[in-house]
Amino acid sequence: AHNFELSEKIRDLFNERPVYYRPILVSILKGKTLNIKQTLPFHAFCYSTGPFRNCWVKYGYDVRVEKSSKIYQSIDCRNKNVNNEGIRNRLAIFKDHSVIHKSEIVGSAYADETVQFDKNFNENMDSTCSPVSSSTNHIFEPGKLSMFKYNIYQLCDIRMDEVQAIIHENDGEEIDCKERDGWLREGSIDRIRKLMVSAM
Image (cartoon, rainbow, N blue to C red; front, side, top):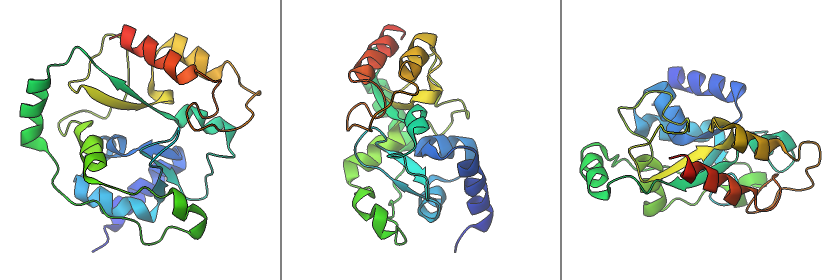
């Protein structure tokens, strides 16, 4: 059955912020991952590639047109300081075995962009969010290390002045949304990743 209470909460969150990495919603809502997986497609669609990879975008919000959407772009970052064996042991307890569902209601305009889920993608999305974490789990701060080796963040959640300066250095001068750097200047994502790794 459709969870209307959860659906209203998700709708409200998307009204506040049009783009989310799913583990952020799981953390904020403190709900069951399976329920959120089932409800999300009623409110948003997910990109499988590009600068908004792994992010759920509210229906009607076009990141290819909205230049201000660059703050919601995603970036992956590997933490070399994390012990792999410890991660595997921790994930063996909390791993989400539920099945992700493709949306049946995605409009034709977005059909080619709807994520094509596979096993590896599924596990990557779930493994980056600790089931016992707080709602600030998605925030990147220097010196505040994640327990996971592989993490995905949205640019607006990186609390580093140097990174935010790179994000906004071309404000008002954005030309188009490119596959790798999105609305940012070419090479910006690599520059940001280097700053994040150095801050770990």
